[in-house]
Length: 435
Image 1 (cartoon, rainbow, N blue to C red):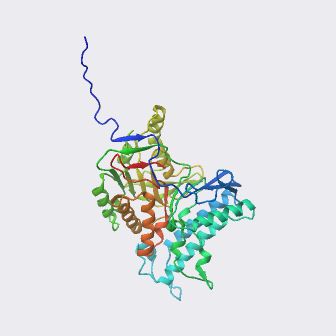
Image 2: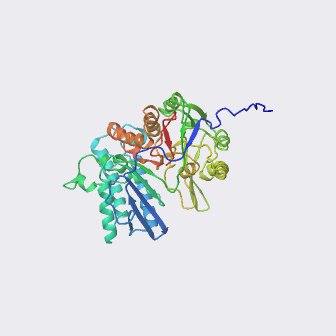
Image 3: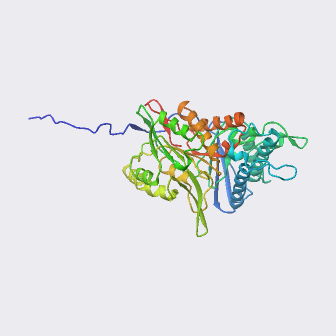
């Protein structure tokens, strides 16, 4: 005789998410550029377009071998970052070489009160340095390279494109510039130098070999996130406003110590849409090696191997099961140097987060002034959370807002690793993509 069997199912076994068999619809990238360095003296570059912006070559992509080596590219990239750091530390002097003001660019996010001749001269110099690095990167007289350079520069001189740079080398792409020679008239800079930087012209993401290859949609009605903070920075102007914004838009978890963060990183499911960090970052050094780390309100350095060690067991176990470990935030590392190239042999924090599922990581490539960092976060997160923009568009709008309103170029020092299409989605009709 048949008997009815009572079945009991777990409530919401998918934890509010549904995996997609393929990427959700998103805007294509008008340009993808790859740099590969199979040996220190060999750097190969290629590019293609998903929109037909480039002429179709006989092969699958345009490609060339650069005349410059990997070591020199890394050295010039580090030099450019140092020039931006010098901009932050600028101290104007009088005719008698007496100090007039102490680091005004470090202490103020709004630079409209500065003498515009002084400010434009310094921003123009940053643009010249960015154009120099791009010129050295593409320099050479080989026929294949000359043709490649012409096509690439022709595209980069446009505006409002979506661009991916996938590179073995840590190049600060948003800080590079095009058209500097057109800015000069009679040996003096004219026009607006802000418009020359790639990060002001285009939406840009880099990948550095890190990416997630799965997608999902959310069934939740309210997004979740965290604020991971150094209590010593709580009095920075607008820092509290950033946390208030996050709390108003997210189911917010607030952490101040590593012993609060690390147990959550150890959980198989860390279900946050945004992970915001506002704390100190630095280069660690030992045995002739250096790498990045950040600190919350205690002294434990949180670096890429530490993140990797806590997340790796869940990521690998999920792969064996043919599933994914639920870890998908956009990570905003508002900490010094967090987006700068890591030393050879040490992966960056950005790559560590992305490798384990983060949609993207936004981080500065210099020691960012605290006052500007809080202003930047408030503006970017307003675009991302309130206005619903993708991370790529939110970053571009933030860069342009600071350039036009505060006349401050420092938003260009923030770089996005993956995440061009990431956005907070809270309904089955809205897709979120790991790029």
